[in-house]
Image (tube, rainbow, N blue to C red):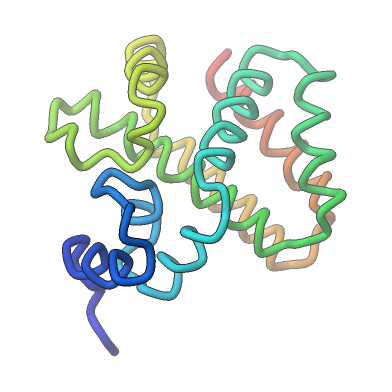
Length: 168
């Protein structure tokens, strides 16, 4: 078993491939110390993934089914469960960041640095909620995906669970 690489080590490797990368690139934060995931995130539009998280949360918690359906449909049409799992991992990191902001820890450890202002608003608005409960809901959704539950059903159930969790 190899321990995760430090962000600085990953940054140095990525800089050899993409010299114009900066230290705040989301790929460095989302990869979890894995160089292969960092390369994968470098090739995908990670900011778009972050925005999908924000859109999903706003529409799920806000109870906007039409807008929510467009996000769910996007993932259903892709037929790529790995991409859906990456989306759920990005949601996990969203709540980790919100928890980090609420606990007044080092905000430089944020993963969704591109959505810092939105994270602050979210963490302040839902400060009374235990974000670990939301993380458990996401983990249940990831388990459903692994159990071969349909993507749209998994995401719809997660959206309903978020609505009920944040609007009791």
